[in-house]
Length: 115
Length: 116
Image: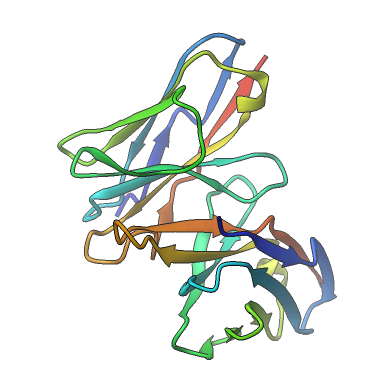
């Protein structure tokens, strides 16, 4: 079982650019959540996708958008990057058979640096 | 919204000692409390969780206790080993009244260092 896989592992961008991060959920999982983890902080919920639709959203601006594909994989897009967007972006998957946000399996994340 | 406070921010113990990490939450409607362990360069890994209808849960060397009245919950690790060294996060979740969907709020983490 491959678990949750994320790509790329590291990314360097400049202010104003756009970035796309990718996630493949654990086998058998159909719900994908994205979190932002700033250095020394706990993960913060960005949004959650289920059945190719955004089901829940945290307190993040519209610059953050996402997509889920029929194979349950997901993308996180961030437009007009700011220095403050530098963080570890984590993808977590779960099964629709469990309540949302319970029994989450996290990937190792994408470290985004905005210069 | 929910606010989760976690203490201490760092904890150093000797191998074999016990370690306790404490969290408080603000939303009395929260009903699910997981603990995650994050090793360097990895994503958080669920190690134990508890629901609000249970006061205590144990899994080998790890236990979690919940006090709903005081709105705090704690992680207890006994017989600590060097491989327990990591950052531990508590979190709280509640179901959204309108949609039924829950949101998960994390604490800021505790760095546990177990010395041989």
